[in-house]
Length: 476
Ligand code: CS2
Image 1 (cartoon, protein in one colour):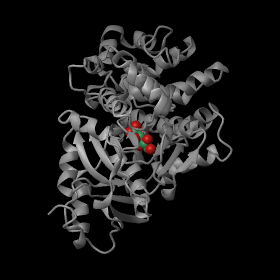
Image 2 (spheres, rainbow, N blue to C red; image 1 turned 135 degrees about the vertical axis):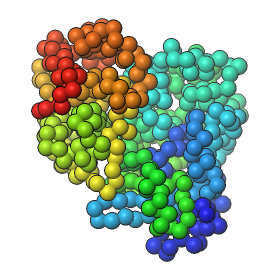
Image 3 (cartoon, rainbow, N blue to C red; image 1 turned 60 degrees about the vertical axis):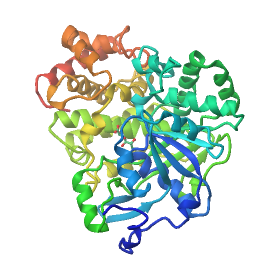
């Protein structure tokens, strides 16, 4: 039997459940990318606001491609559980904020209708870095086949931009109020980034909607944080025993969560602060700390850890060599690349991150983090290298991590998943170790828009790549 409104009364009394009338709520949020992260983060904050009496903020989830989430959630009428675990134990609760899931490729007209519904006020997005189709920061990749496809008005949309364009055009025609478009992805200045990329798309697609967007919609930036490892069959089997029913949409996470949101909404908003969200004027220092320290450390643990034979973050962080390197990366390098907000202590932040990484109750696969490196590195590592480099300061830990990434993308045993994978493989074939560093980080390199490595750094990088490619384990 599946978790559902019918089976919910049978759950053990210890399992918290939605304390509000789900059926009475209209959908105020359309969310793109209804994966595990959203279900363990924003949907939970929304559930708490609904439980406290906010009304009409139920969520219509949109999956861009995969039918899997709909198969998980539809038979459960949108209900699912979130289990938080650390060394002190587990707590499980049922979340009721998600109303339905649409699969965009199959029902684009329903996505348009949801965006153009009068009750929709917020459109939020967590589609991961590669879903933004950036050629560089704030530059839309018009060479991408999916973007070209979506610019053809005869074709049903496939990307976030094509889907948003159809829905916003409809809203404009119906003279409905504008929307708040809220990016919850790990991009630098994610609100501004989304705005600029969407405007670039609309300028070529539908100038009238581009103008309407500028006058009626806002794009607050957000810093989102919660470590949500992919759910495994073992997790689900364990949960079966606790619930007595099957929750195919269950998510498992750490107790920690954080959400810092720029206070710039086009209309009303749920009281997410009841779950601890912070409204601020400027998200930049929080977001920068998170991207360069947490995510930067994660990516370093992923490539160096996998090359050293580890499988999970909690194993990699207890490897003395990697712990020391990640400490240097966060404290001596990333933390010196920006000015923290008055309430931020970066040494304390680094110490708290080490504890979170060590949480063995929630094994977090290094391969999950290693995915899409070409899309992650430009905001996690390259700004620190560029900014410290301008003052003549070296970043030996980041250079070592970067060398590990270049070696990693060639190693067939890792079955690298990255939209730039074929291009990286081609560069390896045509340039070899000597050339690939220049092709990526030289003055005319593929990442020159984010960082150009000076000759000395390139020599150092080549040495690391050679060492890791020889099968030697990364050493400090
Ligand atoms: C991770 C993030 O997969 C990754 O690249 O670094 O998903 C990370 O777990 C979250 O950003 C934590 O908030």
